[in-house]
Image 1: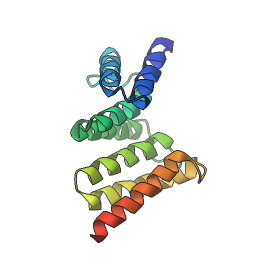
Image 2: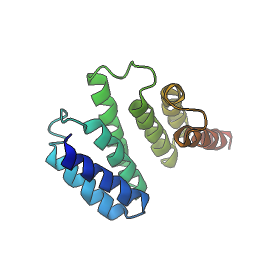
Image 3: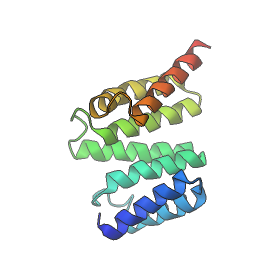
Length: 149
């Protein structure tokens, strides 16, 4: 990805974590454009950028774009033959994002399917106490509660 783009990615994440979603969006959009996405799906480090971009759009409430970016990540990982690797953290994160997006959109059944596909990757790659795995478990409870209603 290169040092400059790596720094830009970290700035976008920092803006998102600090709640400055508008600046995070403009930073990630510029980065995606500069690395040629979506015309080119070959940029080094694109998978990291797609994870962050999906999270930023999710935080903005633009669930359609967040899901499109998560789907692009899953497609990219499949093309790189990384979707079959157990414990692929980016694939787990993409699935977790898709599940959260679907739950927000009111489709708890599809959210459950996406989460069930993501959990083996997250469980394999992360310690049971890791915040991301805890987030997945909380999302699973929310999905189950929604389905039960």
